Length: 118
Length: 114
Image (tube, rainbow over all chains, first blue to last red; front, side):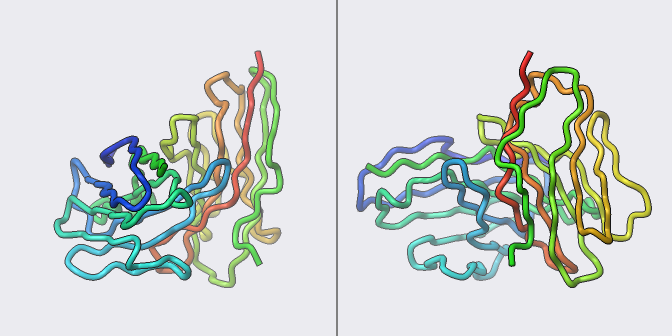
């Protein structure tokens, strides 16, 4: 099946610093990628939809200036958490949409990135 | 109103037994898709099974089957012959109409005991 990678898998940073998380589709082109946040023992909450070559669409309540999303190529989207604070500590998961497959199961998930802000 | 409701925070089942995980949904769109994902402790989201709103038959994938009751707006996941490796969080999700985004339920933690 289609493979999506995320880097890094874990990151620990100091409060006030910025952290960049990469999401790559390894064997397909992804015109659309999605970023989710998951707090411990909670569900996945969609943060934003990232479209290649255009601005991301953010969900209500998500600060676009804090969570910068760049989808500069068909295989890479990045999420930058700017001026991170302890409350930003969470599990961030991306997914990528493989339009070429058609059908229903066209969204594939990365393994996630665990962010801890001290 | 919540779009996806999973009422069971946790479920226990013995190995080799069958278990049903509940999911109800809410949408006014006649076209939608329902998904089940498994999330082990490692965090990856593993796709299990899909049911389209127009599908006439219940979806099945190996030991997984989906009990789709459209009038009741329920899409319960049935896992037959549970295995220890089935212990994980299970999420029900929905995609509505032409939208590409998924809405997830709160999940059910399944523990399989020997």
